[in-house]
Length: 74
Image 1: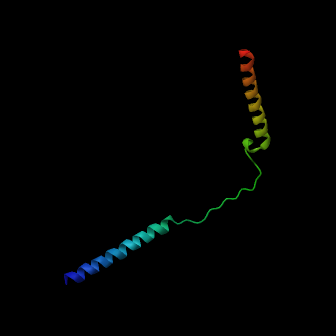
Image 2: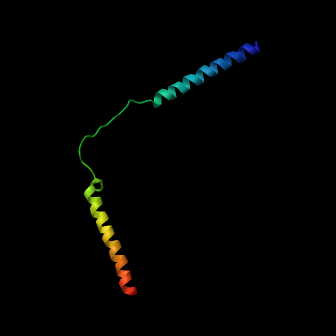
Image 3: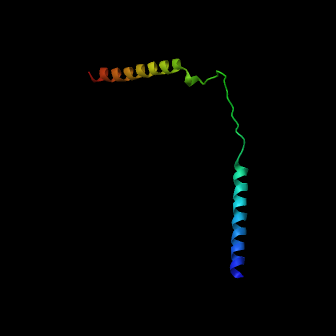
């Protein structure tokens, strides 16, 4: 008799646990929310012109610093 009660209790616990886990899994499921933005608004740093101007300024500063150091040592 004790074996039957143990098996029944084990089955009941397994069914209850699996049902509880199933409810948790369904609670986390939500509909797919896709937002597609087709507007052409972009940030200032995405423009290639900004990168070209920035690179030119960097190269000019680099040349000015390297040439300025050479004149002082000569």
